[in-house]
Amino acid sequence: MEKRVLRDIQPQRVMYFFEEISKIPRGSGNEKKISDYIYGWACENGLEAYQDKALNVIIKKPAAPGYEDSEPVMLQAHMDMVCEKNSDSFHDFSKDSVQLKIEGDMISSAVGTTLGADNGIGVAYCMAVLEKSDLKHPALEILLTTEEESTFKGALSVSPELFQAKKLINLDQAVENQILAGSCGGAGVKVLLPLEYEQVCKEKEYKAFQLSVSGLPGGHSGEDIDKGHGSAISLLIRLLYEIKSRHNVQLSHVSAGTSRLAISREAEAEILIYPEQQQEIQDTVEKMMGILKMSIRVSLVIYRLDSRKLTD
Ligand SMILES: [Zn+2]
Image (spheres, rainbow, N blue to C red):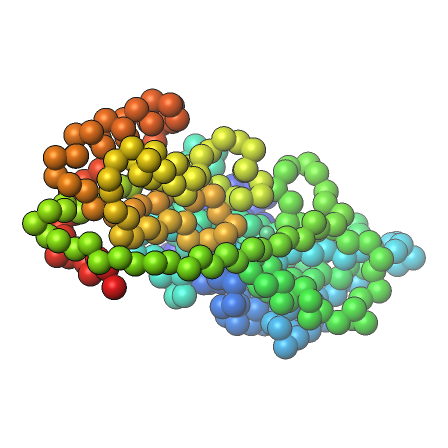
């Protein structure tokens, strides 16, 4: 028999649905399967359900006996999730299930990925409420949207005529015992910098080094930004700035972060230096680490010069 990781955790049916949802890959823009699963489940359970072109699912449940005259209430959650993983993870978000594990009193991913509780747990709550027959509630209108973590395409495509409710409870709230009655929205900025490449690849003179920052806890760019987790991108750029202002180095490659909604956990750069500078640069890095006083790992390791095309 299949072993359910969250079997003993309360509320049991919420955790059951969360575990079911976690089996279905559901990055933003890849919601067909999760949308079909929820819509199919609602139809099987005899609920009035709609699936629109943007793959939003709308499900209605009549008021419990005695609550027919109460105002209807809308519950809202989104079915897509942020797909972030550690660089050493082989997880493929387009087809793999998120593997769950329990660590102390936390549920987390067992394979170095984001968990998807944002907002899988909101969807799971909606399904548990829809399923339970003895709850006392007014008529419920459930709205589960798509592409919340990217373009808001789902929310922007919703047909308002499907709803009677004037009150909405947003289940995409991260703080326990609080109800969110709205949403602040978000904005993205795309910056394109013209890069100028210069031919410096003189193998005999330069040595290539990889400078990497890792070991940071990451987190949600909105909810955890005040917790001092540190951003691998900022730390790497500060390190590079210090190194560049003190030493004659060339930068050939930078890569960092994987999602604009996640605080970066890892970042790396490839620099070209004269071999005799190695110790000085190592000293600069260590000095900077002393200033930053963070329990992160920074490594400066030799990189095979012929393993990558360094300049265009
Ligand atoms: Zn969310």
